[in-house]
Length: 220
Ligand code: G16
Ligand code: MG
Image (cartoon, helix red, strand yellow):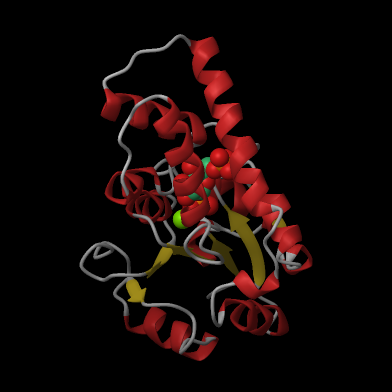
């Protein structure tokens, strides 16, 4: 039976990918690297340092660790300027009422994000109090598709992985959920997220009853 739901942040609760893109784009331009929205897809769900490595690979540049740390910090400062302007209106449609429905049904809720800024974003969206646990980029060492982030979430909630459902928009995140032995709901395009147990375009037309019906049907 379902006891807990674990949510990815970017692409599931809020669309911060746009702000990551604008901040990386600004940095790439300063480095003389042409960074496009198509390239940005490669960064989804990936850590900050790995994102920088991908951009440097695109531009064919090699830098020292010190230089990379300075650039990653610089990008984050620009990103934070966007984040600090966010408010509740940026929560994606239906997700807040779905989480509220889970809480009303005594299902525990956690965040499982690669972002080190996750708590700040939850605060800006005024939904930090909805989460029983927050596992973010400060708490994990292994990036998705490693299951660490979701296994830590289950452990903090004191729920066995088999009783957890993960909501993810990135392929690496879906793989992480599967590596953790959890039922996974993909948020987005079914042709990209085909490995998920269930794929929905968003939470607008979704509820707990539908989730439970799909979990029963699934051979999982
Ligand atoms: C998010 C984004 C990634 C970003 C990562 C790290 O992950 O999808 O693009 O690189 O966080 O973010 P930060 O630089 O804020 O630590 P998720 O797991 O929430 O989708
Ligand atoms: Mg995501």
